[in-house]
Image (cartoon, rainbow, N blue to C red; front, side, top):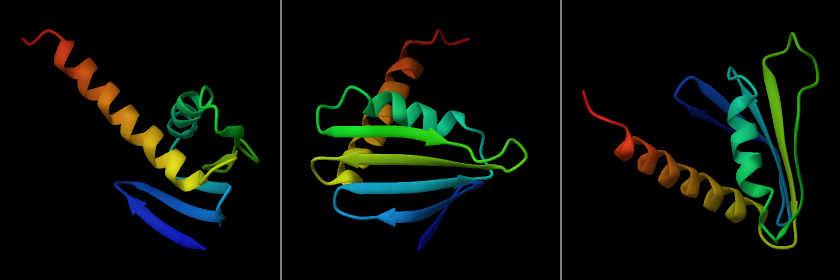
Amino acid sequence: MVVLEVGKMKLNFVEDEAKSLIVEFEDVDRSVPEIIKSKLIDNKDVEFVGVAKEHPDIAKSKLVVKSSKNARSIVLKAVEDLQDDIKEISSKLPKK
């Protein structure tokens, strides 16, 4: 299992196969994997995407992706697209 720390988040790559990716998000609420899921839902190469939370008292959510192409590449592209979306929103917010 590969473990990455991103800010206060910890990402555990539970499964990292060519067409299947399961990433466990620790120390973050469910919104981060849900945002990634929302970007992946319309991708024609994604066969299944879901977010699972095993128990409300456990601070871990899993992003599960099954695809017809490289799952990791598809997720990385979705994250890059989300970064672009956030930059665009930020640029349009009125400055004080």
